Length: 172
Image (cartoon, rainbow, N blue to C red; front, side, top):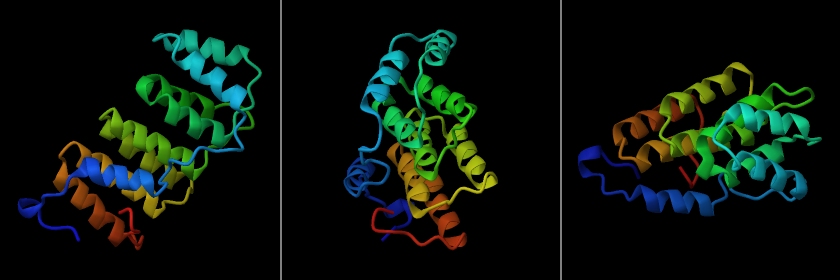
């Protein structure tokens, strides 16, 4: 049960690990082309210059799928800025469309790099574009706020979740 902030003794790192254990956006996709995944990860970690990375990505014959994007974001979390630029770039590629899981992973990554404005922007983009806002989506945002001690915002987000008629799950 969530307690008022003054009594909160929750260890959000521990909660985050429990959530990861519950497979919120953490299952590695077996349907992803591993050669493409390796190539995209190699490119994204090769430089800090986005234009150079983008040029390399455009020159490769990579079939982008939501599963590839999710796995790329997961594996490139140490290169958060490049991974988030990749997420935006790939959305503009012909024949590609994000899915809820890809958005969830981008939201998680935005929170991990403490770009909460971008995290919220992705959430609103999901809603605008008709993607399903799941309890996992809400849980990821709550986790990211809680991880850095933004307990009031995490609790407000939890209340928003309940007000939107989305029921918390065990991870939440």
